[in-house]
Length: 526
Image 1 (cartoon, rainbow, N blue to C red):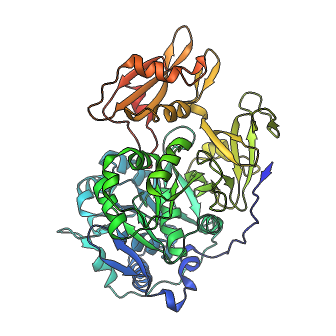
Image 2 (cartoon, rainbow, N blue to C red):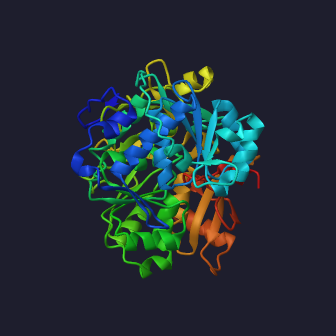
Image 3 (cartoon, one colour):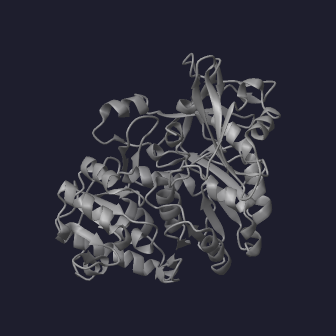
């Protein structure tokens, strides 16, 4: 077993609201908590707390509280913070819904979670309304944050004047939020995260993500995803920083906000890193205010990270986690800029890890002297941030979190000489070529170093002779002339024979989730 090298943090046994706001200094109340990126409208901490308390009172007046689930379906806008924390302060559970979901996908989450009320925004109302009516949520329980004819707005609830309720629950067992995740396999499932899980992860992250009150942080990663929810929304508020929100990613607006708002810290997924490293527009903007950049949600290669660091001048870190771990378990700390950016760094405070050989089931405990790394194995993690379980799915819960409390991540990792970790790939995505394991992420990182390739994804495709062969889906740089054989030859120059790309298909864009993960299932059906 490998323990974190950071000293354990004491986890307060309080609700998330009390942890973030109950003891806020008077001097911080008039700091700006949130800025709406497109309009520049500001919300102070005093205003945010007042809105959260007012909304919790309005929900209590609607008889929404402990035991109820409320759905939040919204892009990144300042009101998201009000609604999210208002739901939790009321004692209810929030289930956050992907803003890109179709009505059919929303129906599945509303029905599975048992949501009794839905908050959305006017651009997303058609799909949300169809879904809500399908599952029986009445129009009176559909709140449109920015207003729409025939529906109550957030302002209507905030001006009711209902007092915040007195709420009692156990922070360790009461479900605060239920994002949905497929885990290591299967259909999306409600990940039950307690108030203590969320409080713990913010407390664990604070020493190794050096946000400060003077930081201005771009919130482009979606708050409805656990990465944006914990690392952006909650941690930034706990540190009394300022969040500048973007409802969707647009490269020009992204660069303009960094320049005009003098942003100091970015949280990104690898696709944004590719744009920062390669897009010619970047050179037209002043990014000199940036001091730090954190990538997560998908593997971030060392070469790509170094290119981003060189072009922006900001220190680049990488972190790792899952929805099931609230999410962060590993990060490159600011005190170790010498670590390879391609590593995920060290386990954060209170985290214990195991590395399990996927063939033998044996625990890996030693490094290979020649390579300076351990053998590859599945990463297991344990700590106070690990989920309570999957909603209504005891079987999947037992398969994912064992009797000793270890979360089986489904990710293949190695440990380096200083105790740093490297994600090799996901267990279920490994390509088996003649019995050899070929990690797609390694080939994708290599392909991204080609000057004529702007993005790439690799999957295994069935092959009668070899079992599976690696197939690359390649997005060319605009107007570039690049042929299949040139891609195959390029990869062959850099990898062992069994890792060669055997097929290439050129596509317009690599399908990815809002969290930046490659949707390999979409490539397999092409």
